[in-house]
Image (cartoon, rainbow, N blue to C red):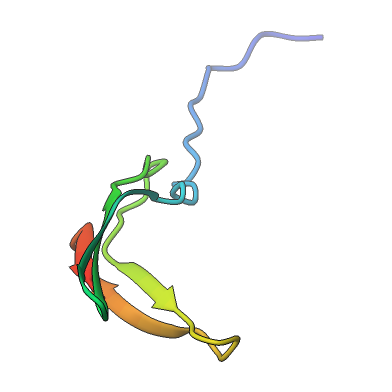
Length: 74
């Protein structure tokens, strides 16, 4: 038992951002779609890039969009 110490403040680092929510998928042609998504809650982190991946016929996924914008044509 003794005197109370001085209070101190602790701040943790940023958390992992939430996943984006797809808001639009619009066919542009038989082989192209426009895809848009909502910017997710960032939990204190800086979101500098979105990566959209696609796969066809059970093959490996491939990156079809990489960048800061929240929409693309695939």
